[in-house]
Image (cartoon, rainbow, N blue to C red; front, side, top):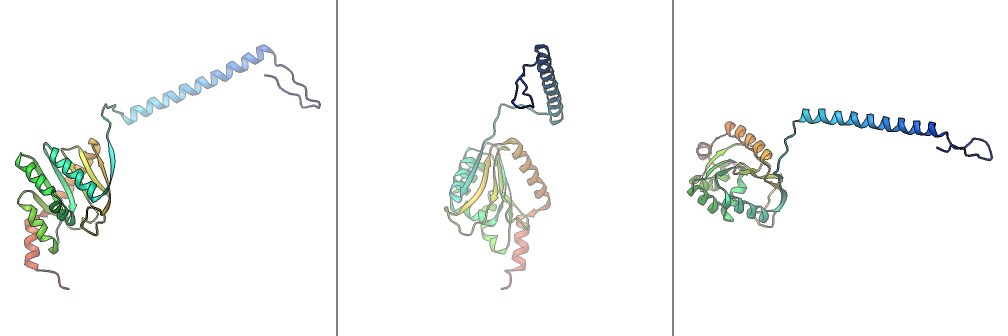
Length: 217
């Protein structure tokens, strides 16, 4: 409110009080109009997005090794109430057998839980696939390499970020996401059902492989 002159020496002159108050008022009115416009934009955005406030906050964790994966899986299966579904490469069937996960799943089935799974079965995978067929249904689907997820009680999820297991070892590194987010669980469940419809029963796949015999070297 005290503008300088353009002459030398510089002279500073106070602006008239009414002029100063008028300029200040116009600036505040302009800011108020802008705030009201932003408020209307946010209200419209809120209506379009249909936000649904929830008291539940999902938890997300990163699993970094087969050891952490086995521990998380055993805990989830042991605490499962209704059951779970899964998609795993066949090398994970070896891990479930070696590190006690199969025993937990058997107990889940015995107490009435359901288990539904998909795995990629080749001739070399017949033995581990047959090992688990007596307590859960497995459906074979070719081309599952890199696909891995499980959903327990329609809420708790474990899904692969980067899994390339070269050795059956608890120290083998993996990158997987664990979450209890219901929305993500619904998405994985829907994906599973689509793949289930495209797959074939494990027993049928195994019979075809046995009839064909081992691949020629």
